[in-house]
Image 1 (cartoon, rainbow, N blue to C red):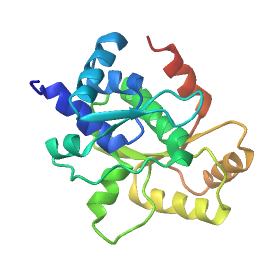
Image 2 (image 1 turned 180 degrees about the vertical axis):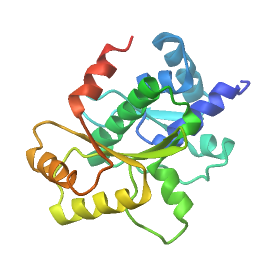
Image 3 (image 1 turned 135 degrees about the horizontal axis):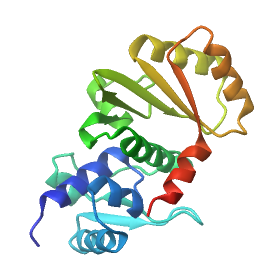
Length: 210
């Protein structure tokens, strides 16, 4: 099989975003429809560059790279560790990235993922990084998808660090997570770069995409 530029794009995007569904890949790789996307993904699976697996009931297949696929894009050969407890979060991050790509007219080059940010930090450095950042009009925005409650002190430290490092910090939160929303709302009095978006905005938008 001849590997196309789009094939390499698919492999790179799946590698950097981790828990990709076929619908995500459709938009990341610019396919015109879902059928064409699925046909190409089947070819990449049949030729050994990708695998797919169903991890959770009610959640579509997750696509990931084999060592052959990783070698092709020079991403090492270590297998991707799919953490079941993170699948919903990582899929929501992808939904959010596509949402902002569409709304803000961003390209893939405008976005840097959490995985890439950790790689830029270097070996042995492990600190909190946003789920992804994007640049627009010479400004840098960080995006935090916060689905579950964490210690308030940790949340406040992340807010403070994001204030120091990024022009705008965007938080995606379910409307039922009242304690997270309260902390973010209170923090807006001290940190002027906080934006809050409700998770249902992202979900409604993604559900409406044809």
